[in-house]
View 1 (cartoon, rainbow, N blue to C red):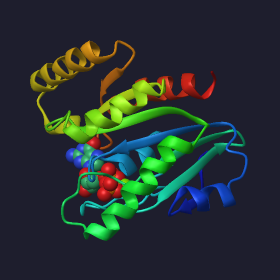
View 2 (view 1 turned 30 degrees about the horizontal axis):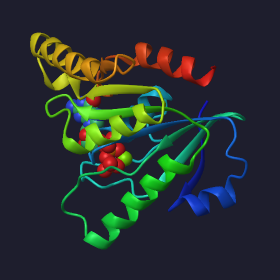
View 3 (view 1 turned 45 degrees about the vertical axis):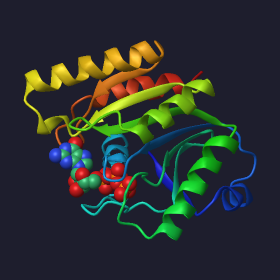
Amino acid sequence: KAKFLISAPDIAHLNEHLPGDAGVEIAFAGRSNAGKSSALNLLTDQKSLARTSRTPGRTQLINIFELDEHRRLVDLPGYGFAQVPLALKKKWQESLGEYLQERQCLGGMVVLMDIRHPLKDLDMQMIAWAVESEIPVLALLTKADKLKQSERTKMVNEVRKHLGDFDARVKVEPFSSLKGIGKSKVLGILNEWCHP
Ligand code: GTP
Ligand code: MG
């Protein structure tokens, strides 16, 4: 049963309040509105663990949820949202970058992309960064319920091909927080990452 642990504006705050940087953390990253918080809620079977919103830019802090003493899930602020004031945007992107660079216990990255608009520049940067850092990556194609089965399969295959060419270790799965598509598959992968 996941529990909210801490909200932190930056890594300094995080290190101060969550000492040790020990155990395993799995981070959920992606563009604003990609469905990160909704995915966390589905995967933890808690409707309102992470706050979701129709308005992009809802999650502005690093939110950490505890699974048990050694394992945590992390809801990161979304990237790529134009409407946010520049100063605020800079602050988030900085804390995101710091988190990714400095957090030793980062054991896996879930990169969420809307299945209708995957593989944007910032998504590729995020995936490339994780691959270079030898952090396992799961690319989730979210809102899969928005496409017909045939279109969904086509998109999943295209993204698998693209990311497979990039690095064979990157996994790609369709996902829907609304319909539960991909839930058991994703839980299986997260479980592997949590028990290395
Ligand atoms: P930020 O915190 O702003 O970065 O956004 P986020 O990535 O956490 O997105 P969030 O989970 O808040 O969802 C954004 C919007 O997409 C909400 O209106 C959700 O209801 C909707 N949404 C999320 N997942 C799905 C899904 O699987 N299917 C459909 N149809 N809508 C979804
Ligand atoms: Mg969010």
